[in-house]
Length: 302
Image (tube, rainbow, N blue to C red):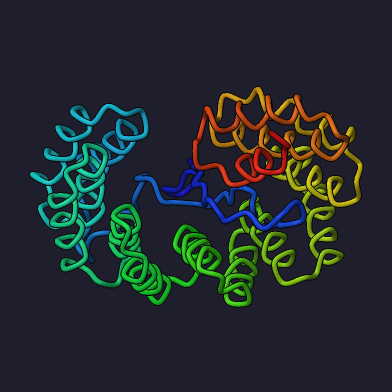
């Protein structure tokens, strides 16, 4: 965790359009998780040291899934400082984690009402709207967070993700480029930039982004997946499967699912129909709606 942020993964399922459909891979994006807060987060009045420490401890408990512990710590932090914006946001994340979305919304709104010039309450409301399928509202909240703080990377990433998901590729690319500008060490911006370029019919530029990202981040799984897809497009079936095979054993379910789906395409390309069927079924066992795997099965003669 750095400056109150932690990278987690969000997957976006996209409709299959054939072997060369580049947007089928999972898109990895930043979201905001509770973290440390400076004394300027809540109010111009300095916060008690105890409140800051309890808020930080509560944030760590949330990250570890200890919601009851987090709630107790954050409640005491708010006893020390009832106008502590960050603690109200974190308390909302406790309820978010429990599925108590209405209470989470009330906590986020209270945080926002205490100080609208802090990005985190706006972002939290965006995540909540995202979770509940209110995409337009989520975008509004992410934009509000960015109006407060244009460098707030999690909202930049999630706004880009939403634009990409609804086919606004030029606008999504603009947001991914800005994400790369404010958070150059976050791989999500690079992956998103490559994905949007592919959707815009600029594969050479996408390959250049992947190459530069690989120099920066090494053999990161998200980049390995993109390189494998580039090989699939060139008909390098065995080479692509060799890149994907380690990802299929990933403990990350979304990554493993995507790898199995593309392995199915690789095997289909070299006419290993039974192997393709096996790989597609492995992907669908993880996510029955995986679009690439479903496409591969449809292409296998029954």
